[in-house]
Structure formats: structure tokens, C-alpha cells
Image 1 (cartoon, rainbow, N blue to C red):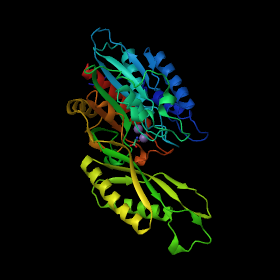
Image 2: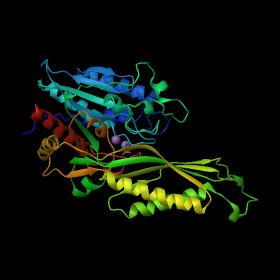
Image 3: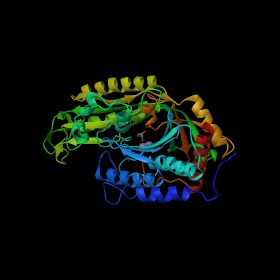
Image 4: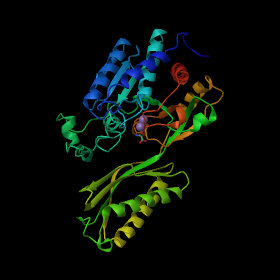
Length: 407
Ligand code: HGY
Ligand code: MN
Ligand code: MN
């Protein structure tokens, strides 16, 4: 049984994605980072759409945007839907905002059909899933879950501003927004960011688990020197050491089935063409379905990097920035979501998510489930990220069906 209006609301979602896709910290590309001016403008725009839809809206001091479709039942619990509104640098317009706008469109659909729900429906736009500004992901959802630590508060951005100051307020560490047991669940619709659904010729899938993820900074320190007068055999070149490490990461990752490891960022000091590099800092991102596999590979990389550093008379250190265990989606919530998907297409593929999501954090507060939407060529974290309007329409139908069946 599908409850759906003739006039498909996917078009509104597509239009709104286009609007949000133009709100950026950087001209010409889409970049929206934690508590930036662009984030405030994007929040204001989504808030306006939420208010038009009859939702009560709140924005917390961590920049999380929450719209509530209130249930008339006084003792109602809450179903939390949404995703993140921040982006990576030079991002696509779907990673994050699609999930927020699908949840909002579902609310609009339910209100239009005068559906009275036995639970409140909260739509959330998390303020920092990607962790671009402070290099530590999930700051928005950690604030909602009351999991921000005193250590987090001292994180600094590129400009050296400490997180505690940027967020302001003297109330100390944020408490959880939802009491234990208050949430029925957290359900996020998100692009797959991979090739599986496209290869299967299907628009939608559900997620079984979110992979374990660890982020480190690897630091090689040698001795700066004159590029013209220092013989090759006398050099302690941090950059050639780092380049050997990057190839090592690629080789070792390839030896472990299902593991991915990425060096995406490099900082060279003094970063001058006629000076041998003194110090190089590299980002290291390692992921796998099993947390133990991530730990094993990180351990092996640390050992091999120490050997190569010794051989090159460099010093080496590996600084942990953040690590999150693999998180399982809730089986019963996921079954319900899969049933809603099966009303839109012949079957509901069950996928592991290699990408991290706010559900990793929300799983500490409530059962989680994720709806995956096919994206072209699995491309993401790239301006050419794309989702077909028909797939958005199917995702919306599945979400509305899921909510009504849950009610
Ligand atoms: O990096 C990730 O997995 C996500 O896009 N934050
Ligand atoms: Mn995302
Ligand atoms: Mn992302």
C-alpha cells in the first residue's frame, strides 16, 4: 500500500538542493564548514522551509538545526530524521542535504495528508559531520548526544581558534538533547557514495553497518637544508620519507581484503622549492567493516614507518585524531525500512557503509537505520555528485511509507 500524492514532491527537494548548493564559504565551489557564515545562511534557509511546513524550529549553539512536527500525544516519544548540512571542500550538493530535505519533504507530505502521528517527528540538520574545520568529525551530533569532551574543546582550526571559543557560551560541555529512551530511533537517508546500487540497477538500499574509521596525523621530521649544496647521501629529507610512507599505505591497504586507507592531506615545512623539507605532516584515514582490522593495519603501518624513518635518519610519530568503532544498524528498524523500500522496488539490497555518518554517534542514544540512495557512478565528495529526481521520488515514498507504517 503506498500513500502518495499524485503531485510528486521530489521536484521541491531538487529545487531546494539547488538553492543550498549555492550557499558556500568559497566562491565558485561548494564548501560549507562548521559554524561558518555559509552554514548560518544555509540554516536560515532550511529553517524558513521548516517554519513554512509548520515545524517548530530550534538552532543550538553548535549550529545544529532541529525542526519538530509535534504529536498531539503528550507522552509522545520522538523519531529523529535527518542528516548533515555541512560539506567537504568543493563538494557535491547531495552528501548531507539530501537527507535533511527528504526528511522535511516527508513531514510536509504527512501534514498535507493530515496524518496524526503518535510520536514527534524531529528533522535535524547536523552542523559538522565531515569534520573539515577542526579535523574531528561528528562535532554536531556529538553535541546533540552530549558526547563532546574537554579534549574536543581544545581542538584548534587552521587559524588556531580553539573550538571552545568558536562555540562560545560558558555553559561548559553540552548535555544530550534527548533523554535516554526518548528517541524511537534515528533514521538517515543518504547517497550511497559507492557503486553497488547502480550496478544492481536499483535506486534504494538499506545499511547493515557503518564501517570502523580511524584518523591519524603521521609526522616525519628531518633537517632542512640547501637544495643546491646538500649532497643526496647527506640529506635527512622529510618529504622523500613521507612519499615512501604514502606508497607503503597504498601497498599495505591493498593486502587486506575490504580495507581502505587514504592519505588525503599533506603539509610540508618550510614548503619552499630550494629548501630540503624539514617536517611533513600527513593525514591518514583507515577504514574497515571490523575495528580489529583497522587497528592491525594501523599498527603495521606504524612499525614499517618507524623502520623507514630510522633508515633515513628521520623521526616519526603517529598522532591519533579520532577513531570510531564499526556500528551496526538496528535490525528491526532496518527491517521496517527494507519493507518500505520493497514497496518501491523489487528488493532492498543490504549494504555496509564505508562512509561515516552521524548515526555512528546517534547509535549511542537510539537505534539507527539508514536508507541509501543511488548516486551516479558512486561519485561523492566531488562537484559532479548526482542523484536522479526519480530516485529522490522513490526515496521520499519509501521514507513516508516507513513513517506511516511505524505509526
Ligand atoms: O568521511 C566520511 O566518511 C564522511 O563523508 N564524513
Ligand atoms: Mn555525508
Ligand atoms: Mn561526506
